Length: 438
Image 1 (cartoon, rainbow, N blue to C red):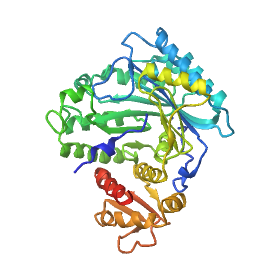
Image 2 (cartoon, rainbow, N blue to C red):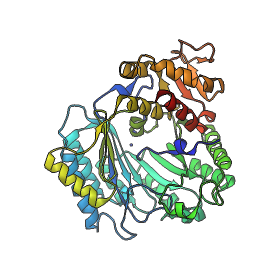
Image 3 (cartoon, helix red, strand yellow):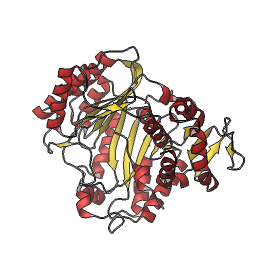
Image 4 (tube, helix red, strand yellow):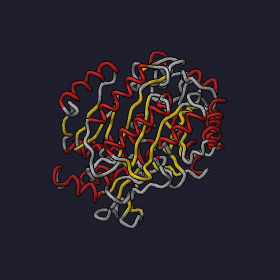
């Protein structure tokens, strides 16, 4: 059984070499946002699997010749301008999309400057940008670097031209190698590659080929997602989950296991359910989400998490501009409501179990026992004990020693999913946990 939804669900999609975040510290208890996500929705075309909030501009349009993109940059600056400066500067800044590499270096520099002026950016902050092969040259890349970008996430998806075409991607394998060579020429010290498994007509052999090709390029980080056929996408019209030419769930599980075995053997740490990194190169920005920390979100379709309140902007450009006008007039973002304590608990568990380090029970106890009940930890342990016995969940004490289910009561400091067995059935485990706590 392979729980594809949870194991591949991506939080909106930068590391100065080493993450300062101590996994033993309950960071979700912090309240000052130290991360910001900026959504740049423009794409040359919509990939067949994509359900992200994007705006298609065609192959010839980019930030240098499109008034639509320039107007959007203006709007983003207005939205950021609604927030007053504070004493805690941002430690991560992430430009996701869409295809942010359609922006000119000048536009990107303006956005980074605006964030810095309003919110502050710490020295050594991780500033990431998602880029697609074929959308940048060396001059643009050098301009991004001069603006402050120090981490790049390259949307590769597959090292197979036929698969890329079947996905609706606008780049070729040759352009992947050209893009990586440009990163090297620009002396980008930290870059990541994205890959997708479970694609139509994809085999275990072709998946192995993509993994080996990616490793050969020596990225510092790899994100490996299993295809989910999302409603209203092109793939949703073409295919039914589990039917030919999509790989079966059994094959998809084998692809997940193959990635885990291949990448860890190559020296990558499997630090999150879909992410691998060289030691010290885990994505600091995404750790904000997985540790349930507060963050700013700006732009069409973006979500912010401030003061226990999640606020998602409209997913279409016209509606986003309307929301922005209303928010500017009100002097602050409109909409949203505080997340109830029980929902905060479930969210903390859901994102925490994405991480290889798992969930700290003392931290959960400090954060939620008063509001969700003194028996919260006991209920979590009671629910997960069968999965500890099945070796899908691993219990450890404060020193990191693995505990058996029978000897663990009262000694458990941390719970995590086993790799890869627990990750593969994560939905089953979380569904049981949510039912127990609901």
